[in-house]
Image (cartoon, rainbow, N blue to C red; front, side):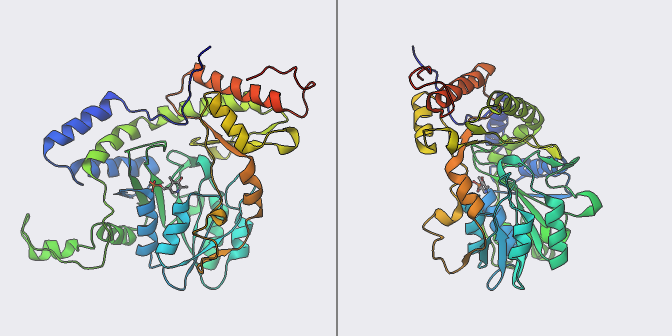
Length: 402
Ligand SMILES: *Cc1c(COP(=O)(O)O)cnc(C)c1O
């Protein structure tokens, strides 16, 4: 019997994206222009923020946000150990010390750990919405207010997630909000432009600063003051970056954004099917449904129960791959990467829960392009493997081989 292969991810790119890119290519305007401006306007409305700045990655967005907030040498920024390297590296590239405060049981940074990690040098908190599950932002905003800290959300996974009825990017109840929220449009993310990102902010001054720094620090004021439209003269007001998003990428983003609600509905459906099939089993701990708002289910991080299985996580992934199911792991905790070990500007405040969770984590395939049959195939093979290696099952040899 030939096995159908289920890749870890396949993007959902339709004719609309292809037509818009073609039109952009024919238009003669390739870099940031009218498509990017439209994408920014529509994204701002979707995220419930007054301003959105398109950037060429979430990594660029995080770096730009921290730099524009003036965070640098001598400052401390608190984030989670259970994240992608970009979260920690951008803090270090900004010149600050990266302080790691541990996660809670849901994989998101624990507000108590944040509070405990605050020092007089702390300047900002960078929470990550792990897998699309919203962090406890009300608690984080309270800590930020108490200690006068900036909040820059790493919302790489969280396009379309919400706390209550407030989308990630919008102000929460009581008017609390983050200074900047950074989204990713990387190839595997919920909304993709191949590479890309967006920063939303409620702070008009910060927005103006980020917009200037995003494109070489070229002052728009100088442009207006000294030049006619299209004139050659410009002034570099600040040392900036080159982080802008092109119209070719925004052409894809415009349509990906318009499809997000449909994508998320499908993602929620798949997550529910996984939970329904796997949550009763002793071999697994499944991610909980999120009741305090909306979870966009960027990832489905299943946890193995080592007490109930005679197979480790790495072998489980290898065997699933041999069975045609490609999985991934989110994340290898920051302190386990050589680049951060012994780094003079990395301070591990707490990481034991992240380190304990890591060897149990497997992200199953979850994307709108999966058919019901694909989802059933994943479930069948994951269950089959669990039965085969279960320490709680019938005597060895009686379970169905994979
Ligand atoms: C993907 C990701 C990023 C980086 O996004 P890019 O757009 O690739 O720069 C940052 N943080 C987290 C948690 C991510 O998963």
